[in-house]
Length: 280
Ligand code: C2E
Ligand code: CA
Ligand code: CA
Ligand code: CA
View 1 (tube, rainbow, N blue to C red):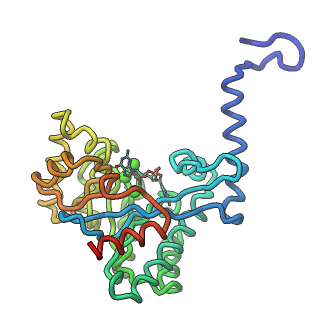
View 2: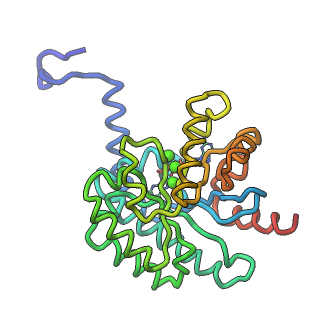
View 3: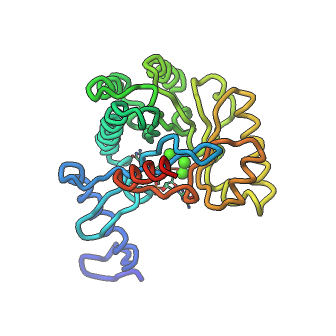
């Protein structure tokens, strides 16, 4: 209801909206200190081959808020993108991932593992993005070929040439690229053969409905075909059931990520599943 009179004369007072705004402002204020207070943790979700063997993991960020508990990245990443804190956060995730890759590279059983890290478009468009990533690789001693950077269609909506140059520079170091959430953007497919991509990631929204919805099924089948014809690897994310996996396998998809194979978990849990898999 509109409040009349007093100092609030021109304000709409909607308690729900105000509570939401308050919540958001508090979260944004807390986010400013989350990195320095060590409240972020990397989680690792396995990526597997057609036999279920673990090839590596995607690193997914978790924020352990002292009062609110675990805050979802779906909630805080957009906030961090708006106020550009995402750049510092992204770099921290990259450094953490690269330190892990360097540690794994020292052991014969873990040497081949890869890590996929989500890049934000703000970070990538920074003038020093390439130098920054190179420095992190050099300083941690991570093998660049084990690092996969996940980009989205939104990266190429503008400044496509610049983005392409940056990708080429990083590819020259040995880093690989996956196109995340493929099919969910509104971009044309014309950039696909102009950009040095290595992998297409089929979005979980299509995987979820692949058995029930013919449109999703044909999108997934064409994506797999497209990847084949462009000589790109393809991975399906959000695989939750054996029926989905079997459908994907029968349509030529050989790499999977999803709850069926493992939830995102802290390093300890991920390394335990690695050891269990080796014993099995
Ligand atoms: P994304 O990159 O598309 O990551 C996949 C999301 O799907 C993750 O959500 C993951 O936990 C979830 N997921 C995985 N398997 C399944 C499944 O079988 N079923 C269902 N229903 N969901 C599954 P999460 O961890 O909440 O992350 C949300 C988004 O936040 C990510 O989407 C990514 O865009 C962003 N994000 C996460 N970590 C980072 C980061 O370190 N840096 C940046 N820039 N963004 C990040
Ligand atoms: Ca991702
Ligand atoms: Ca995704
Ligand atoms: Ca997504």
